[in-house]
Image 1 (cartoon, rainbow, N blue to C red):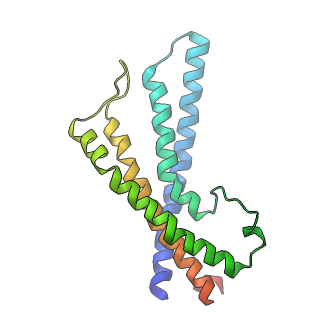
Image 2 (spheres, rainbow, N blue to C red):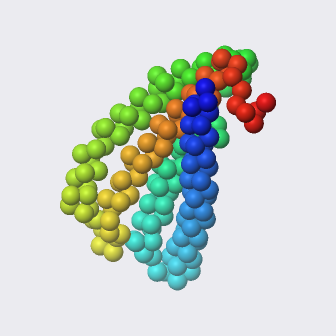
Image 3 (cartoon, rainbow, N blue to C red):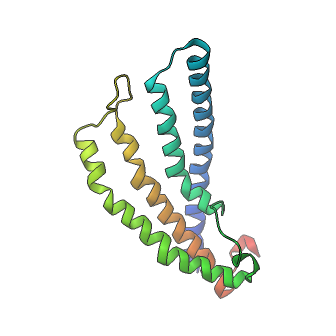
Length: 174
């Protein structure tokens, strides 16, 4: 399983870096919202572009940061039964869930949004609102990027669960 171990280390490292970048992007989003609130309520000067920037930043953080959240096991889970399972049973549940639900769903999203994104790029889609942001097509490109990172991390998680099931321990876990 040395190949799986290398894959896990590479993908986990990649998504750690992406997660760190998303953390900084959260800071930018908070500052943008702060600026928007001060300008709108303090000076009665709202801006459609600033408001759209908030939405775009949130969308990027959500889409691209999902893989890091998966790596850190930060997604919402109903733990009624799972909580009492043994580590091996939890690994089986996670492995099956990843292979049957997560990866196929992510592939469907990537495939089904292909034309949506290509059309947006073809017309260089921009905000329909006066004063809105240009280059909405760049935001839409985050959909396949985010779901691709999610697939890579899903495979990494599946590999880790397979290691738990088989009793294989990664070098620094021993």
